[in-house]
Figure 1 (tube, rainbow, N blue to C red):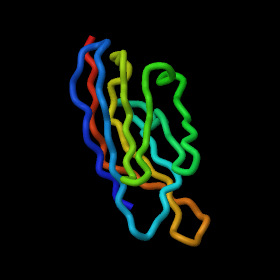
Figure 2: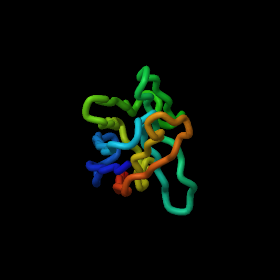
Figure 3: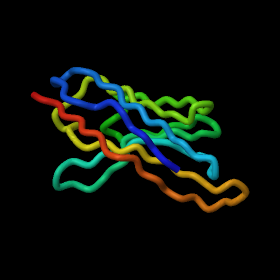
Length: 121
């Protein structure tokens, strides 16, 4: 599974950004797609994820009400719309996928390249 992320950049506090990620695979079924982030000196943390089967979403508490994750199953893409960004949202954001080989149940995890989001105060 290959994940290609785009978006990110520099924005002032209160601004908005949109991250997109396209997953490509012919050997795996995508179970869910999402975004993690890692700030300097901190552990990588979940931001939001969405199920490919039923569209169920999960958000970090810090993202609730400000970020919206959406998906296009036909294109295997996931988007993260971020509003009201805060300096503490500054981090490298990573696209993430859980996927299984067709006909199997074990889920593997895949990561895209990181994209920097910087929010200035």
